[in-house]
Length: 419
Ligand SMILES: [Zn+2]
Ligand SMILES: [Zn+2]
Image (cartoon, rainbow, N blue to C red; front, side):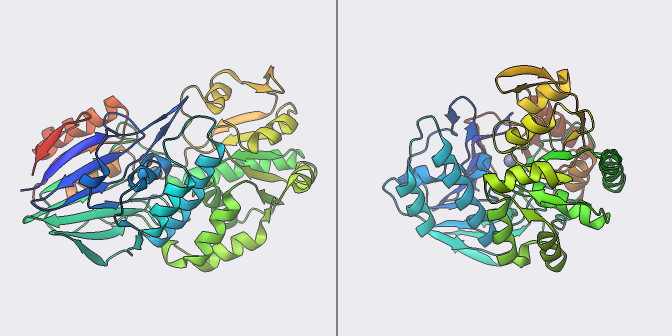
């Protein structure tokens, strides 16, 4: 038997962490941070109780708390090479920008990086009596599902999951091995996404309409994944326009180019990057406002980042458009803009004249894909649903009980189960 302890990301999105305990070995799966007014970490565990840390992907809600384990101790940290490199960019940025107290500094982060162990999709590694294997999770470049075998049990931790192909990465495949348990995310367990092809076509049509009237399109987008995905969509749909990308996306693009195994079409990706102007400073930024047709800039929810600079200059002209391309968390600038049509510009609450629309480019499974994934698993695994709003976690667990007759729960923080 093995034990699973749920330490965070239960009935919420943010600060994911699960501890797997076999007879001899304790393995921590993710240890994220939820960034609000102050950072929130998962439940406490003494670093010397953990033998190894395995990271599913780079997003801070999975990676942001890992440096806490390197204040004194030394232990291996497993991730795909792309995940490690993107994590490096994101955590450094978090430390740099944190106006709040963080319980670690660059030195702990460097220690963490020193203990990195690369693991590719399909290869295995053993820690104590547990075997660890990665496979593609389809969420962002480098994202992995983690399969763990120990004490005769096989457990799958999906991390953030997408089974559909996107422009940037291949969709995840349903594993063929029999499983004893699965820990699955549920971000979109209550809703389906629109058809991807139709979404791309309507996005491009909307962009073209703005350009025809000599407007500019601002696409606020997260630097990891979504920026590159939008550039990929514009390329695939043959949009001829002057495109610029701003923010951390540049550093991320370098990483993706250096690790071509983790993206779907490396050659096309190179072409996309070559066709897109990268903004390198304030001069480029001012020039972009004058000359560019489409500007892709963080942050994706209009909470800081260089998108704010572009908002100031573009939002009050009715020819322009602001096309949001991700979920907007309630309370963010992007959410306010969608709900009220207003935005704070130069400390003034203004009515935005530019067209505003949200396109649902998700990198998570929708309801149907989550259900299809669970239905496809072999061995009648126990199901643990995390990483969603309370109603999403509960709905997917309920569905697995009712429709698949599986033992399924949406655990709370601190809950422990035996598999
Ligand atoms: Zn993620
Ligand atoms: Zn996540």
